[in-house]
Length: 176
Image 1 (cartoon, one colour):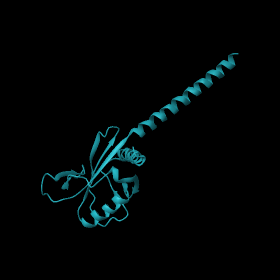
Image 2 (cartoon, rainbow, N blue to C red):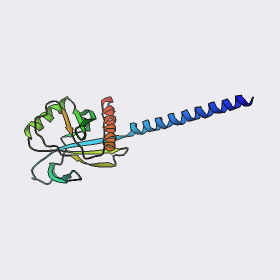
Image 3 (cartoon, rainbow, N blue to C red):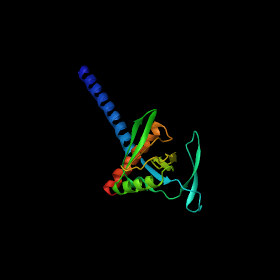
Image 4 (cartoon, rainbow, N blue to C red):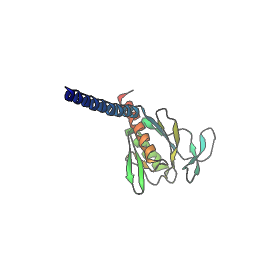
């Protein structure tokens, strides 16, 4: 009789351990599903009317000041996917735009050679973190609807940012 009760206790402990491990994974998954991100892509402009332009500082380590249009030309609502990609010396973020925005991206990039896109991002459960992530120079016409840039953020921040953007894109595609 003593042996059976010990076996039962062992099974009970194993079942409890499995439940705790699965519960932690479920909690982590729910936390990821709640994450949201926002992205705002602006175009560099000449400092004309202060009501339509603003001055920003991009890149924390070696700040660059530029003037941009206040209104973004693209947001997360224009995206169909977002991901991190490995690049020499680190990683990049790759944003893929929907069909209409692909045409606009091509138009903006062709007409703004030598200027910059200014990319602002926010991420987290309540969009608490946010900053100017990059200001890639426009060197060519972007015809494929894909904007790739090296962000001013850690890999962990980039992962959170992409998870949030992916969640927002999925919700948008479902019409929520």
